[in-house]
Image (tube, rainbow, N blue to C red):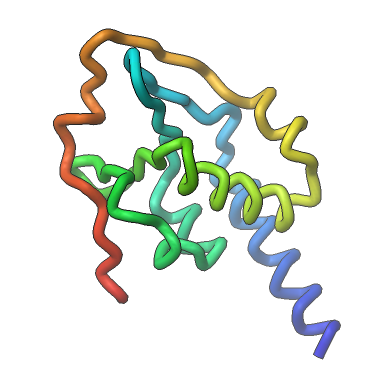
Length: 115
């Protein structure tokens, strides 16, 4: 059973690596922040059902903007575990975009569809 899990982890790592994501972007306004993550990445990590309604989804539904208080760290933990890196190593991969009226607030709240 452990061998199957190791193979599954390696396959997930390979697919994540193939996505070629060099950096993640953190959007924020004066009171909150959101980490932009491709929906496919959440699906690979099998955590899309753990994301709360306080996160937002892009209009084309390809990205989620994970609120920083809980959802972003749910993702960071899962990502770091599967990629075998520390949270400190992960956060060096962030770009920051700060604005007064962040566009994220105008998006639809995320709701897991259960697919």
